[in-house]
Length: 294
Image (tube, rainbow, N blue to C red; front, top):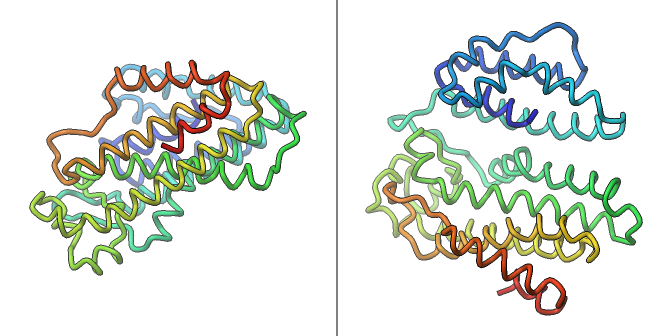
């Protein structure tokens, strides 16, 4: 809920970038230091298009108070991950705040894209792992360094799938997460990506990131298989996003990537089959492990 709240602040387009950055910084300070005094998010709440987000902002103090119900070690883990997530949201605002379909802003390098996927998702993999090692399977004999490395790649892979799937929509909001340096090498400008006719020229750059996302998710599957067999719910909670993510990548390899008319999405029926298959095969470890390798 804390992360959802910071994301809501960052995405409130009817409020100026400057006000959103100030609100994000103030909210981050409250999270990190349990600051006292009510933070007035009234302007932001009134600008929300959905009742749920208005309610969330109006009850932000209640959300923050929940943080104080955790013990000190868990509070610190939560604060650490929120610090990283919020830094990514602020950087995104500063980078893309004035972007538009007429003035597309692109990330400059592959390193910037990697940093972005870490700040908004890779760090969550670490957080999830720290919590599970403390509360769910502290008894397990695992290579924690390897587990943490794979957890970061797991998160990055899921976010990279989102980036690649949402390319047409993001472009029409002025955001291009495909690095400008690589687009230049392909002799294409970010503004050209608004035209589906340029599909063939951008496809090699796009396919490279499909391969990277797949490699990250395969690492996420290895992470899933490292989770102790007895931690069934944690394993399944990891397995389903990986398998659905891999299915999404397979669809993206076959679709027109610059066409804004249809968002690529795994069908509900296919999701149910993935979930059912993973449950049926779970008792049979060798067969279950192959699910993420096909």
